[in-house]
Image (cartoon, rainbow, N blue to C red):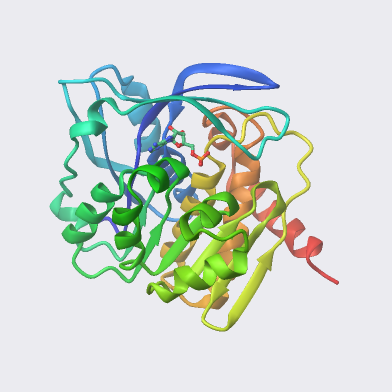
Length: 301
Ligand code: AMP
């Protein structure tokens, strides 16, 4: 049984930053988030790839204990591809192209062993597919939702429908302003909470994250990273580590959610140190704990 299920893109990314570039490297929201989650629990992923997707990428995930039974191979098309670049402001990815490929006709089919999932992460993907997945899980204890500007611009109504059905919504600051049509993040969070979720987390790139609940607020610090080579996948690593931690601890209460946000920030900060999943591949549990302790020191006053 997969206690934690993650649905999202499994992709080949072409990325350029001021510090280097990669072509058709392993990426995708489900990939980054499941890898990050695997430091805390054993997720199952749902997604689709084409026959062009290198076998060793799936093997890499399986070696981390990630269940890939829910990754379909669709022979009729190509793997989802995203091409983007960053300028010196590494907080903002500029999209050059998005080729949906096999995702354009994807209908997620959850394996039986995923349907009892207690924790579900709807990573960045078409909101209609996110809804489809929600219909297939029986009684999840906590559903976390992520998205991006692409879906806010193209499928806002469907996205707001998903927001109404989840427990925690994750947005970055620009997405929160765009989705709720206000420059004020506190107002955006209040609008999101009115739709039903218990918590809203607003990520502020390298400047930390804010948690809003019913009458509660928490501000997570950022980590002063010296080496940032490629921030692609930081949002997904943050979310994956966060929900992986909660699933590992079997909890959804606010106290643990605050710690989960710090674990998310820790894993995301490591991810930015190298391209694709290269830094996460070299990451050990002890590195995570060490940086978690540094976070504790940063916020002491
Ligand atoms: P982030 O964590 O926000 O940096 O997400 C980066 C990942 O999102 C990349 O690895 C891309 O493959 C993936 N991605 C980019 N655009 C989309 C999209 N429209 N739908 C789903 N995934 C996407």
